[in-house]
Image 1 (cartoon, one colour):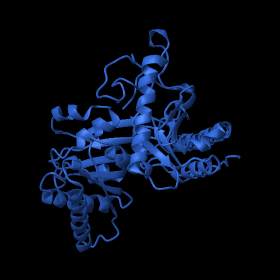
Image 2 (cartoon, one colour):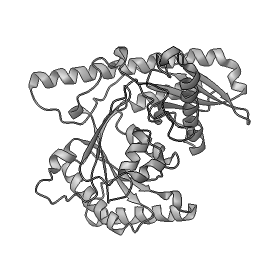
Image 3 (cartoon, helix red, strand yellow):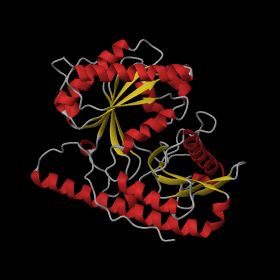
Image 4 (spheres, one colour):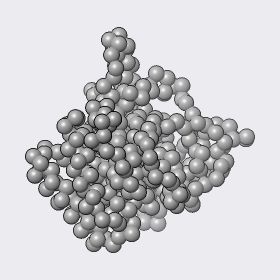
Length: 385
């Protein structure tokens, strides 16, 4: 999926959401030579029974579709491939599979489908009888694991917005128990399933997808360490590194993620982009609504401050801190610039790794294996006090 820089004055899908045509054009300083070929990007497979909500998830998270508009989506009847290339770290493919796919069909190429797969997301409709879905999940995981034991298996217990809190917990417990027991009975004790309660009507689907995408970023430990150094030297309570377009956070510090804090940070990105689209563009809609000058400070009524700074044209750092600690504004800004430079160094190492991988592939004249980015050992840069 590509984002073209078009007229940014278009309509809004829901209150507080991005303009539907908000996006970024190519950036010569960052994307030149950085975009991997589609075959070399890690793949995320979306699977599940018909009408479980697979296509709705993809449209809401990566195409900024209003949740209400997904009611009019038709059922998927073929494999839909979507190329996600939002930023220097968020680069992968999503393959949306029809619910009626038959793994025993002679035309189904398991080696091709699962061989280059980084993560497999299986969507279960929590508002429906999920026994058939569990049987399909077991069949899918068994087949995929035999082909590629390195796949990350993720289970989205979806459409939980219509369930009570007690019912959500009981449903998750029951699905978790049944799925793991079936795998154990089949001798697949080494297979790990991760479970998430999700809905397209709140931020839970974005948080779940954030956790999935993070597992496909080899540089994640380096990014988390940089964020830990930043907050410990700046009096910050919580920090997220967001992909601005999708509102997926690709990294956060070591402290636990509070759902309310994550929602506040997502809403802040919405506010910044909305206001920038209205007041921040030059005449005739020249330029982008999000650029190197983008920053924002929002003071809440509980003596808490939300602080947003642009890292590059795709990424934003959003921090939560106490109002008393914001008195050291100059120190925070200096530490942020050190953090921003360190992120750029990590990106440059990744770029060199990709270029080396592409050159080796061309020299050997052999196809990519589709496993994604190489592991890098970027120098971790300390943030001075």
